[in-house]
Amino acid sequence: MNVPTHPGLDGGPVYLDYNATTPVDPRVAAAARPWLERWFGNPSSGHAAAERPRAALARAREQVAALIGAGADEIVLTGSGSEADTLALRGAVLAAPAGRSRVITQVTEHPAVLETCRALERLHGAEVVRLPVDGEGLVDPARLAAVLDERTAVVSVMAANNETGTLQPVAELARLARAHGALFHCDAAQAAGKVPLDVRELGVDLLTVVGHKMYAPKGVAALYVRRGVGLEPLVHGGGQEGGLRAGTENVAFAVALGTAAELAAAELAGGGVRRTAALRDRLHDGLAEALPGRIRLNGSARHRLHGTLNVSIDGTAAHELLAAVPLVAASTGSACHSGARTPSPVLRAMGLDDTRALAAVRLSVGRWTNPADIDRATALLTTAVRDAAAPSRT
Image (cartoon, rainbow, N blue to C red; front, side, top):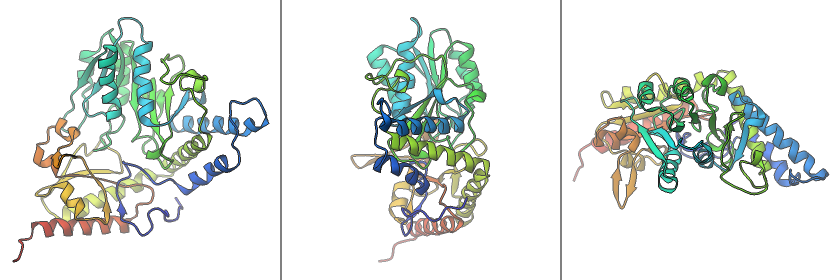
């Protein structure tokens, strides 16, 4: 990959929060710009001003579809991953035959799925089953098999966890669901563009792709809907997106998403995964060497995203550590409520105690991370940990 330093990162902190959001790739921004500045037509219009926007939308669908092994006619453009998840789950439940109102998911899903499930329980009387995970954050397919029956409308299990990077056995889970006549939805927000995905090989019916997780702008995403799958629309109106998502299409952002998908596919084919994994491991090894016996990996060592490192550093509180290192941009898994810290529900579900969960930091690398960034972040974090442990002098 021959991409210069990103202007949004130049001179700023070491950015290790690519799982939260990614900088818009300058090539993506350049591809979208003409559709903001010049080619403004409504793609649904019947005159010449619509021709270029309509063709651009079609091209964007092809690019997104190619990234995940789908057909262009199976791509529904949405405004966010949360919208795509809601369309998949609510749409599947409301369109299901009578007697199929059960949703099965798992406890470490993104809130976009978990909160949609709660809304389906509250508003539509759906039954929701939440599967547990093991100490690595993995769903046991046998647990899914044990609760599947003819009442199940849809199963939703993410491809990769946003906090730990744990990769779920999606193909096996999808096979079980479809054997019982249930649809299978996969939130691939964190995985798309980072690991190879093929919807045919996975056997999924619905799959979410999110633009801002793969160097496109915030505010654009897509839902793969397998041909023949019926969903109840979430947004009604003029019939755009195959009748599943009304509203005049955002052509510029669709072009951005398509361009980002094409760049991601090329990066995967060019060995980008190996580069990212090497940076992640360099960071892990550097911290472990500098702080022997204090670095504990959270999640799966084998089945995880190549760019995600979630570790607890013994003797620290993650929010205090990151506050002491403003030159490193990273995340904790904890939430703050009225001054009190609550451990990550994901890490709790994996069996971590509160002390270890509150010491967890998520460090995620990406397209513009380089070895110098890794070494600088390692030194800064190590110094902060040691300073916090040093006795104060009066």
